[in-house]
Length: 409
Image 1: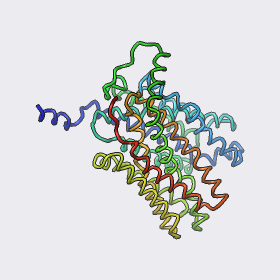
Image 2: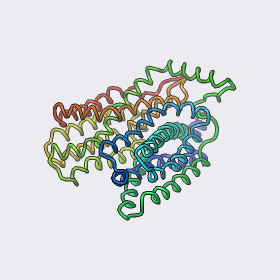
Image 3: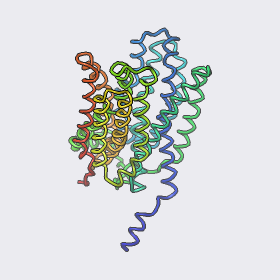
């Protein structure tokens, strides 16, 4: 009997979970590929609409604003319609909205498009991670990092596609329309291959009762209040990870140009190195997590990121700075997926609610740290200010025990 039980546990997942895994990969790729096709066109948008640098920056800020303003709606949407439907629907709606970025006649409409894309990104992020956790439970081992690796690869491909189309002179409208067709087709295909049934099935939770929406909301709110401490710890961990992950994009080029005297090509390499090593870390992260556990993986990752930032700041050579940002990306690679996975497994809390709350709060790191570092850099120096990023990486090592699985009450 025991041998049969072990054989059942070690048996590969059925065809259904395998298709669902491929579908979740597709959703992560859709999410990573969408907006990055717009980024290379921003100079064109600026010129066509006659925007100043400040106006363009304010318009771009509408995207994270949309995510923060509406992101908390993802939990109720997932509870009502299911994570798979919400993720696929958000992918299709993203495809429908994306071409409007090229047709916007002025600042307000362009900012409104980005606000909508930010809202859809937040809903899709929570839903696809929640469904990815369902698939992970079916597999009985870590696969969540692979999904995020797909996002990273798709994001790089989206940027390269946008740059190629802008360079070829295709035109922003036709380019984004073609991208929209691909995104919609991929999202609709994914919708047909996701797991059926309620989101709590793999965790042994009962399907929602026939109680009214108000009663279900009260029950969910009570569960979130009861799990406030573990959710807060996970949120702080994700805020720290967000600060580390964003540092290469926000400050890598500025640091290289201003503090190391690098030219345009070398100045771009910290971001490239960080993204490349982050992708490597996510491609290997599931095996590392299965071997050593989420807590040890995050602790080691925080230490590697802190060491990488220290190398970049202390060794006064451009090559060392690029290598340091690469180590930073490698260390932080698994923190975002592991933290969301833990948020979706907090006992007593619906997976979608846990992922939504922690993911929403984690976005504060992306929003708050860049201006904080900028203010400190103006007061002292950018080298001094970036030690805050190293401190955030150290904080991640301290908060890593929040990833430890908790027994059901």
